[in-house]
Structures are given as structure tokens and as C-alpha cells.
Length: 508
Image (cartoon, rainbow, N blue to C red; front, side, top):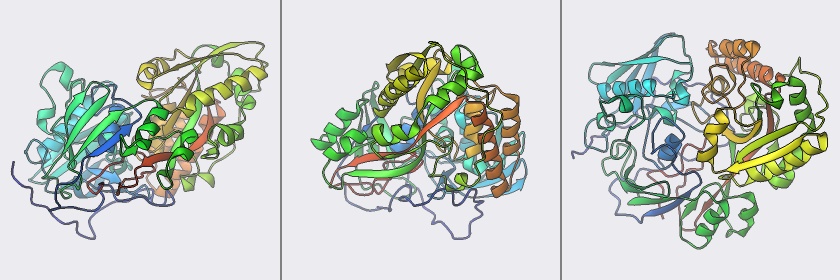
């Protein structure tokens, strides 16, 4: 394996920033400080809340696991202000409404091959053909072609002013050609292997089903040699068990510590981060009780979100106001008052089933409180709680009347309009509410077609207002997450977008 020559990032690169100022505060740079030439560091032991459900495919929920463990990267990444900044692409420029030219940095895949324009184009082509479509490409068709020795031209069928933001998605990670087979299953993204084929500071080398993964340092990482020699990751769905593992020093880092467990950690070990994550009640508008907009209105009116923030989240959350919470500072001043809502009907003992998952331990508690509030309003409520990988498919298939879920609205693309398209339009790939409303689709399309930053935010807020007007979703709380960090650990990446956790500078 040859050593990659590393370019330094030159000031004044052709970077097109979008949505600067989305978030207040800041978090560490994605890979921490460079540690080229450092001595072998200790291995890191990390407990993650969500086990892999798709064999570490980069095209579904597992994509975030890979990015949080420092395995995969895309052409761009998000900075603290929600702006697209260089990753595998050193710079880019907009050629037209439908064409962008990206210049690659010198980098190497973990299998020893170069990151070339043809390899990047091949990776994006596979992402575009994946079934189901990766969330970042919901409603978008793009084509990538190599240009010369270090450039890739990406074109879209329709104007896409948010393309650099879209390419930050963990679902658009660039893997080497060896990751993709030649058969039909591989072409559709069902058997894409990130093992030894990514570009990040850590290389995935071994997995033990859905319980553990082993990662080794990638010494030829373009951003500098990682300070930790490797990572031993455990997937522990139970929040109390994750916290206990940190408390007994079985792990160095534990993500998503339950609020009920935060006080039990040593002083300084519970790190709270404001996020773009909103916990919501999604109401099934296609079938069952909540096909009736009057009953959806009744459910909304029955819910006291301030009680959830104060009691269930013990003050580590804010009452729900919309799809976008206070972490996205632009949203508060632009949000309108929903109009045209249906009149609430008397539930009259209408039976409903609410589903949720227990990987985030607050969610079953939220569901229990909702059950009490909705029963007081006249609904007859049954709860169904499972592990996330065992319930999400049924939720997407509309098998529940309602579903309690936590969603980071900036996770998939970094573009607030994109999450509205994927979650609330007729063709949306993550439409838990089964919503199909002409006015909502029109509002989202208008936002998608708007390039100016301020006007795009205005259009996103207008689309959010249209969605709230259908009562398809009841925003419950806007979350802050607690990460458990051992006293000897430095350089953990506390990311409001929840895409990163461990980087080249993370060590103990």
C-alpha cells in the first residue's frame, strides 16, 4: 500500500456555502487535529445505541454508523453552521443550474487504490441505483462523469441548488470499486461492502452480526494518521446497559445516554449537545382512525408537549413547535401559523395502536404519556414497542395508526427542504405519516426550486406550515442528546447533526 501525498487545504477554494448560520454554537472539526507521526495510541471502546440492520449498507440507516465511527466520507461534509465544506472534494464550482464541477483532493481508499474521478462517479452511480433509494436522493436523479485526472462533473435532471449539501449525506459515501459486485443484488445496493473499501481514518475489518464491530487505524488516511490505533464497537440497544458499560469502564464512549441516567455519571462525563433532532408523533393519514382529519385534530389538541419536555426528558428538551426546532435558528422567525386545519371530532372510544422503538429509552416513556393523554381525550390506545430494526419496516408500511420517532432533520442531506420531501410528500421515501397532499407537495416543490438562501428558508418554513396544517405530524419535543465520555478520552466529536462521533483526533 503506497502512502498518499497530502495536499494542504488552500484558503479561498471555490466553496459554495449554503445555509450558513443554521446552527448556533460549534463542534469540533470532523476529524479532530491531525496526528501524523504519532505513536501507536490506545484502542477506543465505543457503545452505540443502534445495531446495524442492513449489513452495514451505506444506503440506509447503517450509513450513519459508518460515518460516526470514522469509516466513510463523501465529497463534502457539514461544518458547525450547516455549510457544505470540503471532504474528498477539495473544491467545487457551479457551472449551471444543473451542473457542478468538483475537484478531488489526493486520497486513497483503504484497499490501497487511488480515489479517482472514475471511482467517485462509480460510487455515486451505485448510490443512484440503490433500492430503496437512499434518503439523500429522494426525488433527485444525478449523473456523475469523470473529467480529466482529478475532477468529477455532477449533473441533475432538475436544478438542485442544495447539491453540495446533499453530497454531505452519509448515504452518499464514496467507496472503492471493490465494494460493489457486478450482479443484480450488488447493483441495487443490497450487497455493497464497506469493509476495507472506504476512505476514513478507521477501517472496518470485522463484524459480529449486529452485536460488535472491529476497526483498525487506516495509516494512509489523507487527513493524518489517527491517534487511536483502532476501535472496538459494541451495539447496545438498552440505554441503561450502555450507561453502565461506561460507568464500569467497559467502554470509553457511550452515545445516547438516557436522561434518567445522566446524573449517575461522574462529573464532566455527561456531555449535552443541542441537536436538530425532533421527536414527533406521526399519524397515519392513509388508513385507520387517523385517515379522518377530525380525529387527527383531536389527537393534536389532546397532547401536552410541555409535560413531555419537563417530565420525560427532565428538562433536556424543548416543547415541540414544528418539524424544525430551536437548534435551527433561522426557523423560529419564519414559521407561520397553520391554516385550514379540520375541526376536532370526539374520539368516542376509537381504538388506535401507537408504535415506537426502545433504542432511545425516552421514546417508550413518551408513548406511555401520550397513551394517558389520548385516553383522557376519548381514544382507546394500545402501545407496541420493539427494537428499531424490527419495527421501522412496519411503520413505513403504515401498519400502525401512529408512530413515535426521533428524527434529526439535518441528518440525511443537511438541507431542510430535503427532509420535508422525504418525510411528507407523496413520493417520499421516509413517509411515516403516509401523507399525500397536493398543497404540501406544491409547497415542497417550490422550496426545492428556490436557490437564494433566505428565500429557500422562507419556502421551507412555508412548506413546514402546510404540513402542520394537515395534522399528519404532532411535533413533541426538540431534543438535546447526552453522550457519555470517559475522563481520559479527548477529541470526541459532539455533532449537532449526529453524523460524527469518533475522528482522527479522538484518543485516550
